[in-house]
Length: 184
Image (tube, rainbow, N blue to C red; front, side, top):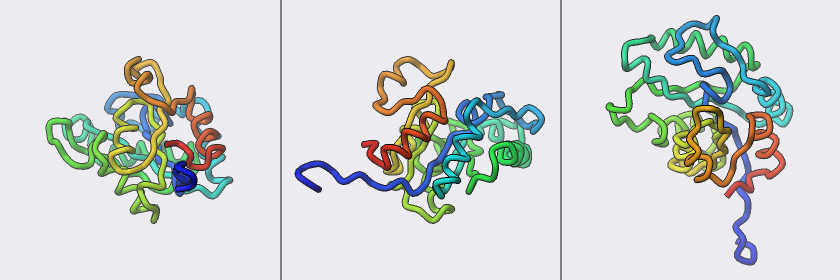
């Protein structure tokens, strides 16, 4: 502490939500041909790579638990997104339904903690960027920070409840890099 002001924590990694944040949200998508990057997603990943900031993706994939898609389908879609984005550091996903009450499904912290572990960083030194409040709440539950990038499905109450929002993923990444962890 310095004069009562907390010292900003460094950003050791940026973790993204997949659907609605990096790629167009196609419900229960198991087809790599349907993967379309959202505007600014590739540029955001490139900017982080240029700054040597590790990246990852944390994604709820309840379609697996519901029997609509398989884990292999999700991995194929993730590989296609990774090809379009340029390689990201790690991809982790929750295959459970909300009714399973698992520890990994956002807004719980499991995915954020696992991605941080795979990247070799502390969860509290990560920033999670996502399009719904569950993404930001998962960040907080893991001790990380979150930035909300609202889209058409984001509830107004979710936007109003968050301090850190950005109009798109590229602006969110620029904000994270400029503030260098001062997102308390």
